[in-house]
Image (cartoon, rainbow, N blue to C red):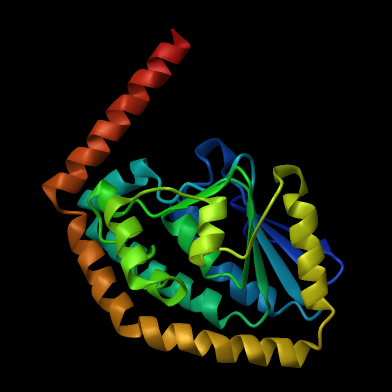
Length: 266
């Protein structure tokens, strides 16, 4: 099928399965405005593919997605219109994934952080490589966890455990993610894509109307649970970009990154 989202997203056809790959490997597939926009629009594009029956979502290189690009955060401090687009886009992205009719298998090949974590857990089946982990570091970088775990994690795990991991930004290894209910299974790194594609093919072979209507019914639970929470959290995330704590954390991170890069090139 055609792909108007390249190079940010790659789309490959395997029979009735479509493999969608986040494609900023040099940035660990962290989302900038272009990738964020592509992720919002790709679901309706795939829904129009009458030969598709299931989707595998993964990341190029060694990460699934490292979440938000810190350089992009800096742009959002002064450009409030861009920030509003970003926040509105976060709402649209979660809605588009939950409304997407085909089953989605997330093949989490590495770090799934922040928005990357949300992409994974909003999928229908989550397979994680043994070396992969999930984390929502919003709070740790001074942001409200709106397009991360606050709206969705309490639907998948206990409220107390959701608070523990969201308020501390602690990493969740693959096996722990399965134990908590954030993932379905852990597989050896080298087997991840083969197993994810095989599972997607299994889903694609099921009666299409029954799969799609059942997915829609199940996702109604999620949509009803998160509706009010998402709106509140997104407004708070918009405001938190202005806080001194957030901006100091980002500046310190970028300074450390620049120092490491300078040492590596010297």
